[in-house]
Image 1 (tube, rainbow, N blue to C red):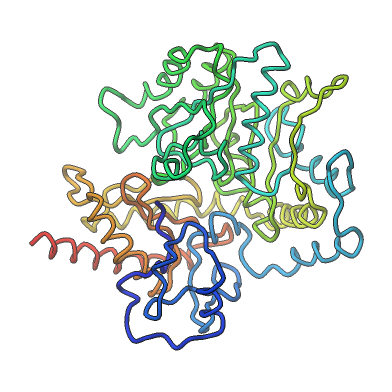
Image 2 (cartoon, rainbow, N blue to C red):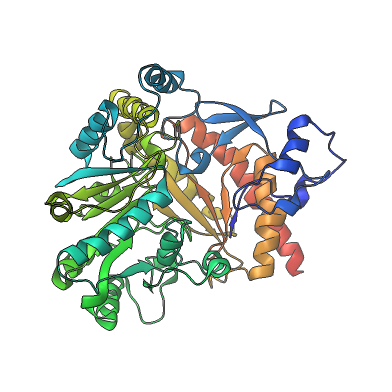
Length: 471
C-alpha cells in the first residue's frame, strides 16, 4: 500500500488535539481514499489543506508546506491559478452541462481537436472520461471490442508489468500488478498477465536490461497471440518508484506488438502534460502507441477529467454503419472541465512550462543524487519532474527492509516527519520502500533547495534510527 502523509504517524503524537469543526466532521463523515481511517484519533490530526499558491499549500492552522507531489502528480501548473478556474466559471454561465452521449458541444470539440494536434502520430480521436481509472477502463473495453469487430473475438488478455498501478476499477485492477490492491476485490475481470518491470536496480534472476522487452514477447507467445488484445504500460512506471525504460525498450515492445498483432496502450495518466518535459511520455521515449490514456495534468486538477486518445486505425471500425462503442460516462467531456483544460493548456504553452521542466530537471536530479552520501539512499531514478529515492538497509548488498521494518520506517517515521517538517511527498512500499517526488512543473532551484532542506536531515535521522534499532 501507498503511505500518504499524516496517517497517524508516531512522530505526530503528542498532547490531545483541540477539536475543530473540520476535524470532528471529517472523523465522523469523510471517508478518505487509500487511508487507514482508524489511525486518526484525538492524538493524530487529519491533515486539512485549505489553500494553495504556486508550489506551496497551507493547512487549517496556517502552516505552509512545499507540495513535492503536485497533490497527486497532477497540479502541473501549480496552485492558485484563478485565471484557469475562471475559465470554468465563465463556461458555466454559457453552458453548465450537456452530455457527450450522442451530442456534442463546442468546448469538447475544441479540446479534442487541440489534443489531437499535440498527440503523437495518428492519435486523432479523443474519448473523454472523468479521470484516469476511467480512461484505462475505457481502453480495456475498446481493445476488446476492436478485436471483435475485426474478426478476432478471442483476443481479450492484457500484458502489463509487475508492481504497475493502472487504476482502481475492476478492469483496471486486472492490469494492476500489485497483489495487495487486487486481493480485496477478487475475483477480478479475467485476462491480466504480468511480466517483469524495468527496475534495473533489482533485475530479476536471469534478466539483463536487453532482455526485459523480450519477456513481453515470450508472455504473448505463452498465452497465445490469438488471445492477447493489448500491452499496457506507463512510459515511466509509477508504483515501485519511477522505473525508467532501458534504451531501446519501447521501440522493441512496439515491434513485438506489430509482429504479433497486439495493440499498445501507453498509460500516461501521470506521464503526460509536461511531467517528463514533453506533452506525452511517448514523445519523450520516441514510440508510437495505438492508444494513450491520460488524466491528472490535462486540467492540472482544477477540474476532474481524463481521456483516451486513439489512433485513426483503431477508431475506424467504430465509425462505420451501425457500429458503436457501447461505453460512456455521464460527466465525461463536461463543458466546464473542457474549458478548464483549454485554459490549462494555454498556460503550459504560453508560459513555457515544458521548457522549464527541460531546463531544470537536471538540477532537480542533481539535488537528489547529492543525497547518495546518506547510507540509507540506495538508488535515485526517474525522469523529468518524476523522481524517486529507494531506501536500503545496506547499500553495498542492496539489502532492503522487511515488511515490519518498512512499516516502522515509512508509516512510523518518514511519512509523518517529512510532513511535520513542511514537505509533502510520497513514502511508498508498493515494492521496495521509496520516497517519491513530483513537484509542480513551475518549480525551480529555490524549490529544490527547500526540498533538500527537509529531505536531507530527515533521511539522516532515519538512518540514525535504523542503526540504533539494529544495535
